Length: 117
Length: 113
Image 1 (cartoon, each protein chain N blue to C red):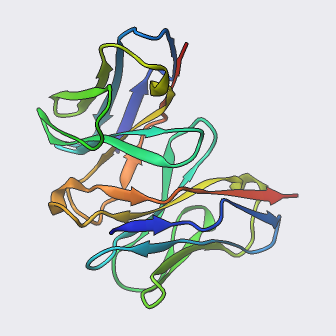
Image 2: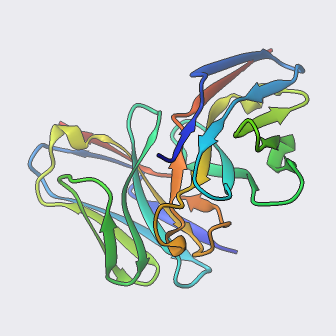
Image 3: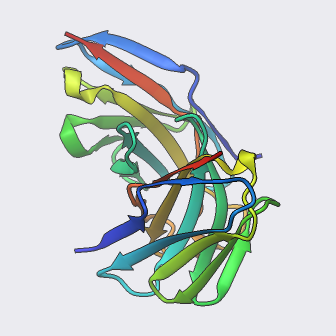
């Protein structure tokens, strides 16, 4: 079965420290992976994606993610966290079970990031 | 550039009343369109998706329906709302390529009384 797991409901870090939000996936074929951020009462904002190529992907707002095929992981990272990074983060993988033109995504349950001053 | 609009931002409806939420996309043609529901600020549940005008796929059995009367318009409806229909409804659009992200509107907070 295709799935995405975000094993931590919440991640707490101090401002200025590095942060990691974990994501593992299970999908048939090559994975197309995405990270999104959601602020309260807002829609999801696209941060970055991995399709192919370099395992380290850089995205918006200083975020990056590392694709690890052997561990089937796609962890989101940032070298120095800001209080304004506090939000809900979603990992997603393209659903490959059906016709490729649907663009459907399978989302994890989300991880709340809390950055404290 | 492409933009997506959802309205209304918030809605309070009595049980048994009808519902119509609208989503429109600008700056792109023939997008894939999606309706999601998010409960309690957590995971997303895909309700419907559409790959073209008049083409609607339902992901879960429910009290809701969707329609796509125009290329860039996606409507979520109900004839009679249930308490369980409360939630945060998100519309999204995406290209038909598998490597394209989805882009989300700002959502509608629906409360059923």
